[in-house]
Amino acid sequence: MKITEHVIHDVYARYARLSPMYFSKYVKVPQFPGQKEDGPWNINRQWDGHDFPRVWCLLDFIEWTKYMDIGGHLGYTCDGDPELEFIEKRFNKKTYLPYPPYDLHDLPEMKDKFDFFLFNQTIEHLHSPDVAIANIHKNMNPGGYVFTSVPTINIPHMTPVHFGGFTPMGLLMLFAKNGFEIVRNGQWGNHKYIDLMFKNQTWPDFNDLKDEFGNVPNEPNNCCQCWVLAQKGNS
Image (cartoon, rainbow, N blue to C red; front, side, top):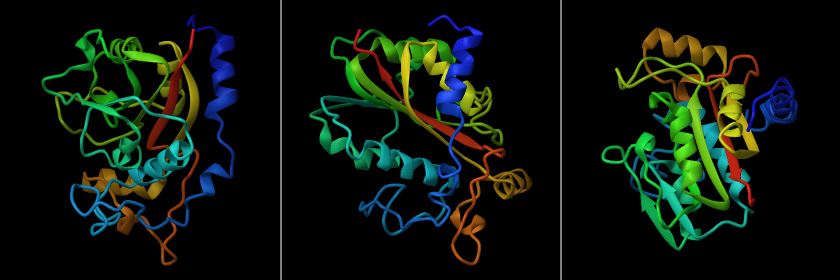
């Protein structure tokens, strides 16, 4: 897609400007929805110890994909992603592409293309994100979906392979200019999370952020992470 001022403003108006209702829907944090008893995200651990933006991201993912007509070939880069539990049984083929040995910058064109591609908390570790997103697009069937999340701001980690973050608008444009159509997008952040993250040099969880009523606000102007569900066109 050729990026023009019109395209930028259209993407912003249609997708980046989320409604006030969006920012309030999970303020009262629901119970952990998973049923697994093992792995990093499990029913015994609940939300404890998990970077809080991933909580809101997972709840969005479940809501967005629950009634989607998806199946076929699933590609994913992390077998610990909590989103897998809620979609993997709907696919008759799954391909795990961990790094290493797989590198999204050098992902070859595959014979059996994907119908859904899941990769989270990865783009900040890509030195050339456009190359990687173009490779994913190349390896997807028409009509296939991709989902990812990425920090907007973060503490240094996995250095030196940590290159930056993306605003919600930056993430949307990354996918739009590489041939994807935006389906849904979301974000989360608040000033308390930012303060604690930089003060303690770690990622605050639900217990660090909740108030006496179990609420955790999502502040539109303090975005810390964002995510997108996008689709490859049929043409």
